[in-house]
Every structure is written in C-alpha cells, then in structure tokens.
Image (cartoon, rainbow, N blue to C red; front, side):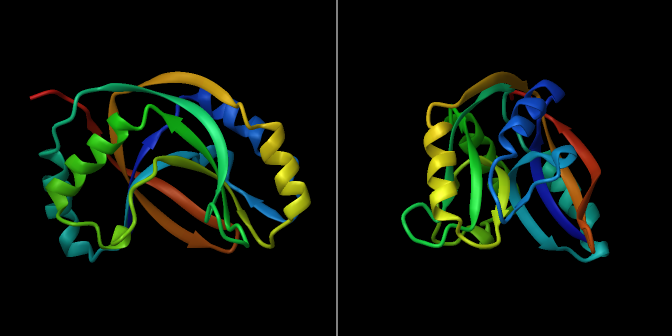
Length: 179
C-alpha cells in the first residue's frame, strides 16, 4: 500500500485554497477534493506491516492546535525551474511538533534526509517554469493570509495512482491528545 500521513482542511479553508488554484498556465493543479498538509510520505508499505504501523501511530501524543494559511511560494525556492507551487501555514511550530511526534513513533524519515520539514499545502506542480506568469502570480498573492482552523486529528491515507492522478482513501483517523 502506498501511504502518507496528513492533516485535513475544513471545507471553508479548502474553499479559500481553491481560490488560489487558478491563474497560471502549464501547471497541474492539486485536486481540490484532496487538499491536505502532508506530515510524512511513507511510500509503499507491505500489507503485512500496516497493522504494526497503525499501532505505532496510536502512540503519538500531541495536543490539538490551530493553523492558518499564510503566503505562497515555490520549491525549490531559489533555483530555477520551480517545480511546486505551495501555500504556507502559520504558525509552523505546532505542525513541526506533530511531525516530530510522528517521527518519534515511526523512526527517522528517510524521505526527509537532509531536508528540514516545511509545512505547506501543494497547490500545483509546474510542468514547465512559466516565469513571467509565475512571478506575477506570486507578487499578486504575496500578502495572502487565510482562515485559521483547529487541528484535532491527523490521518493515515492510502494513495492509489491512476491515469487521472492519485486517489486518496482514508485508512485511519488519529485524534490529537495531550498526555
């Protein structure tokens, strides 16, 4: 099973993000029904290991928190061509703490080796670097600040790749809780 761990967005926040998903040529916009903040991509996990993975995720302790949308940008940030258009979240600290708790339960994240975790929502993947249009898009939305929402759970999803992109199916919801 191809798995990842993510935070979901409430519908009102997803609607705001959908408003950002327009105005650029030559991009593949994220499916608005599947917008999420990925905490950790697990990749292919053998079926026989999923029960143990789910049990380890049950041990994650992290209090509920609030997040808000803030800013837009691209990865990689300083090199061309840009490949990913994103919306940022703030404050970062609670998402970083939850990511650390997940990593503590599962062990080091090999996908993140040598890279710091940067909480964000992927808005689009750029097929080519439409630099003039991209610069205009980023400038127009430089001060973007969106709604705040309460995060009270994280989720384990299965991602199934298909000809029309990935389909994400919920495997399990993990409520956030203090010790």
